[in-house]
Structure formats: C-alpha cells, structure tokens
Length: 144
Picture (cartoon, one colour):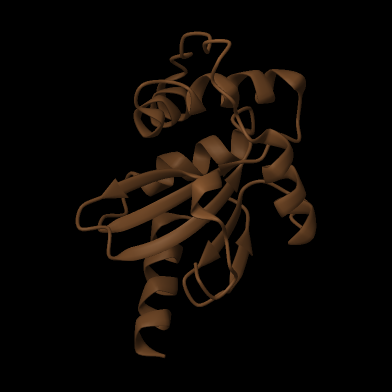
C-alpha cells in the first residue's frame, strides 16, 4: 500500500485471518465482476483488503456506498451487500462519505475499470481474478 501511497482513511478495511497479506481494491458495489471477485476472495485467507468504493456505474452505486460507509460496521455491510445483496440502512444526514476524494484518487491512478486490485508491491490487476491467481500473486511477491 505504501508503495503507491493510497490513503487508507478513504477505504473500508476488511481483515481475514491474520491479515498479513494486503491488497487495495477499487470496486463499484453494483459491478457484477466486483461481486464475483468478492466471492473469489472467500477462498483467500490471511489478507487485509482496503476497499475503495469507486462509484462509476450509477448514482445508485454512490447511494449504496454512502450507506455502507456510514453503517455501524462498514466491512460487514460491504460483504453483506456484495455477497448476499443485503442492502444497508440509509445513512444519517450527519455522516459524510468521501465519494469525490475516492473518485479523484481513482482518476489520478488511471483506474478505468472495476475491480482494480493493487498489491503490496505496487503491481495492479484489473478484473475478477480467481483465488488461485491471488495466491500465485502473493507467492510471487513474497519470493521477490
């Protein structure tokens, strides 16, 4: 994460297992491929995922991300939506979601598709790569 300077405060942090392996994920909550990637992630353990809700598909995506961001447990709300289509409650008027900052960050990084995945070594992959592909990438990073 530090190699590409991603601001973690703009992300939803999801930790699985010991969380020692790290990725950043730019994903739209209404993106079918992003939902598939989330399903693939169920087979990956010991990973921390920093989800940057990158709302490029519809206005509904922004509303969904706002509700997820402002929920009591954003990580759980993200997974509940992406894996089970459980829509979170509407956010309170006081809760601010940094949608514009995340869109600016994505534009600076030239993120043009979702999902876009960044690995700890700064490399990037677009698309819903399978769990085996994730494991191979993690192994390559560790051996480098």
